[in-house]
Length: 93
Image 1 (cartoon, one colour):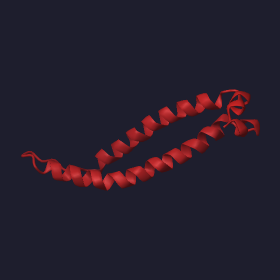
Image 2 (image 1 turned 90 degrees about the vertical axis):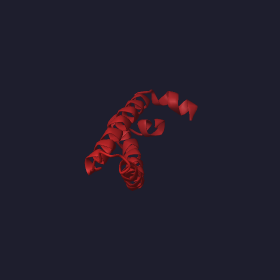
Image 3 (image 1 turned 180 degrees about the horizontal axis):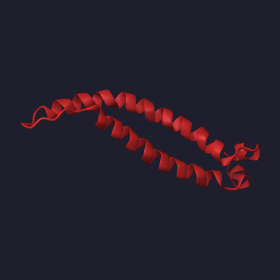
Image 4 (image 1 turned 180 degrees about the vertical axis):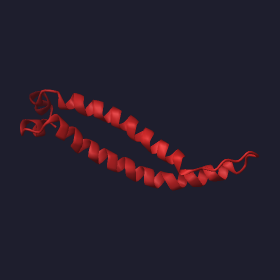
């Protein structure tokens, strides 16, 4: 991070670089977890007398909430790290 700041990277480009990688990992994990979650929840919900259908809205809401929470958490940490003086971070690295 310090080297990128010394070379002239803006805060927005640093946050974009790290958040892009994080969102790709979040998308891959969702693609793995969605079919497993649907299968397990569908089987569990069939045991109840009053049954409901498990639609795509539940999974869309889950991924949007996950992206929102991850974006807020990661964005805050990335911005605070990007605002640190690059000389201090280069001393540590």
